Length: 362
Image (cartoon, rainbow, N blue to C red; front, side, top):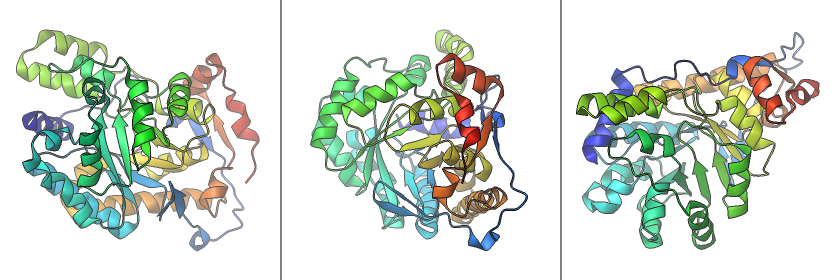
């Protein structure tokens, strides 16, 4: 498992693992420029509250890694940066440390470096399906003194991965029991395939506190596993990876479907690459925007690069808010925008009206 985690980091850094033909849909979303903002740039405030925790900006670093020496350094750099900037982060799947306690330090470093930041613990749905062992899951939360637990859904990755675990029967019932028994909120997150309106309603009914959509258009985990399959000489996984490289629901489509179908806070992730993407996500109904690969690249260069990358996102977000006359996150959530192109076509086909966003007022 440790080798697999190192493979994932290496491939994400060295190979082209971005979606090819499918896009996030952010290119179809246009915030309405305001030639008279009637505010100063210095008036723009990005503070927000998420699950009763204060954030300086609606940005969270998505779960990426843990369980290896290299991941310890990466997690430490990210944790120190989010602590100083008043943001939050998730850790990668903690399965490795639950099976081998000697690896706990690769995750514990996060809370050591970020004593007050919002930290999300992480366990995979396949492990939840196979082992109804909630004591281990509680240990994952306690390990990093987490503010919430993420259960990640990765059926696409599992079906392509040479050693993948294709076990998803009964997951919703397990999540429901977990939500009733755990002391921290449960966030259910995808990993690049997106979440539909139907699944969002199932999760809300199961009692989860938040949904992280992780839509398609950014990093493709089918692509990551394709490269691993090529290196290992596994033809079936290789061919599946190629076929499913662009599988999933685009981020914008998933975000609109979910925010219009449930009353839960939603994290928009999947191909978030700029503060403009963050602004569009919040305007489309997200509570936070999650960033992954760009921060992974920065974190491999250390804490200063990580802090700089996150600070740039915040500055870009503020500039965008200024240009639409939104002085606060609450006003950004009401900002008018236009959805065109394939995103609009997809939403209309699914019964959602993209035109309602165009008639809003700050």
